[in-house]
Each structure stands twice: as structure tokens, then as C-alpha cells.
Image (cartoon, rainbow, N blue to C red; front, side):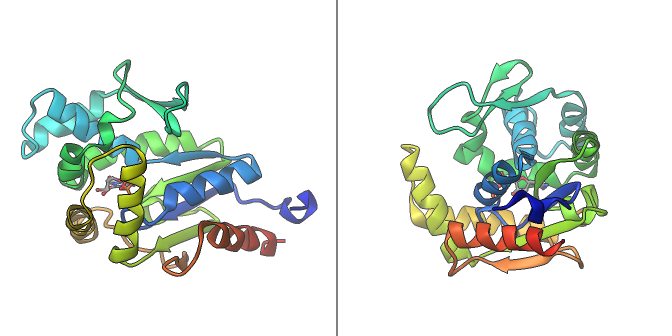
Length: 233
Ligand code: CDP
């Protein structure tokens, strides 16, 4: 890819979409290609859900979960172990990179993410991180709420069957005892809550470019996004 073609890169790029649509895979590759940082904001909501479970906070206790979100310290750092992780996820000083990916966290993360106070606390941190620019930010509401002025917004979609199959293979590759039907149920459950919530629901921004990746390889999606960057010249 010739540098000249990419000289008018956008300050930030947003990638939103439903669970397991490939946002992090695509976002990481694109970010590496153009020298941007990649932030998967799902990690932050997962961290709040994990810490609530760890502290024995009732997930239905909105005030307690919100107060936790306001005080939690989440650091997303370059990976220090070669165990398949993309980042180290440090929560209140401890490495919980894999603990935020358990079925227990999957089961409650979307409920935690509905609370407006939790979203406000996370959104504030995300905007601060994006201030300097050169970020590919991934989530559900990045193009609509967190960075509505971003110049390039992608909405990455795929059918629930294809997404479940991808997540199932990913889980198996991490040594998890996965069951395809459970993965389908878990994705459906989260999608339903994420799309139906009042504050910052999962949806494509009006000015987002929607990519249906059902029949596309990772390589094809990356090439498509790189093509969008070239077209900006
Ligand atoms: O990786 P996966 O697609 O399974 O999900 P994730 O990106 O890790 O996000 C986990 C959950 O966090 C989602 O199902 C949403 O409930 C919530 N989330 C959100 O509400 N807003 C975001 N910007 C990112 C994640």
C-alpha cells in the first residue's frame, strides 16, 4: 500500500457491529497497517461485569454497578504473554485478560451495559483516549454516541449463524469446552439486549458504511476498508 494514497487518513476510525462480527480482528489488522492504535471498548464493559461478579455485586443493583464503573481502573496494555491474547487487560492492578471472556461474564455483560451511568463512565474514558487521534475504536455505539464526528465509520455485520460459527472456532482454539448451540443462544441474548436498550443501542450510524461479511474472508474485509481509506484522497 503506497503511503501517498493514504496521506489523508481520518483522525479516528470507528467500527461497530453485533457480537462476534469480526470487529476486533479487522480493527487490529487495519490499525497495524496504518500505524493506529486499536481500542476494543467491549473489554471495558466486560471488565465492569467481571469485577461486579468478583465483588459479589448484584448485577440488578444499578446504583452499585454504576458506582463500580466510576471507580474501576482498567488498563489495556500491549500483550506480555504469548498465549493468544491481543492485549493484557489489567483490572485494578491485576491481570484478568482471560477472565473477562468467560461464559459467566458473557451472560451478564449486556445487562451491565444497559445502565446509563455505566455507559457515561465508559464513554468519558473512551473520548479521552480518542482525543489525540490515530485510534481505531471498536464497539456498539462508537459511531453513534462516543465519536459521532469520526470521519470514517464502519458497521460490520454478519448473520448470527456465521458469527456463532466464528466464535465457536475461536473458543475451541483457546481450549474452551464450547458448544455451538450455546454460542448461538449467548450471541442472540446479547444482541437482543444491545439493540433494544434505550441509551446508545447497537445500530449503524446514518453515515456508517455497512459491510455484510457473511461471504467475505478477513482478507477481503480488510482490503475493502483499506480501499475506503484510499478513496478519501
Ligand atoms: O467480542 P464480542 O463481540 O463478543 O463482544 P464485545 O465487543 O467484547 O462486547 C461485550 C458486550 O459489551 C456487548 O455485548 C455489549 O453489551 C457491551 N458493549 C457496549 O454496550 N458498548 C460498546 N461500545 C462495547 C461493548
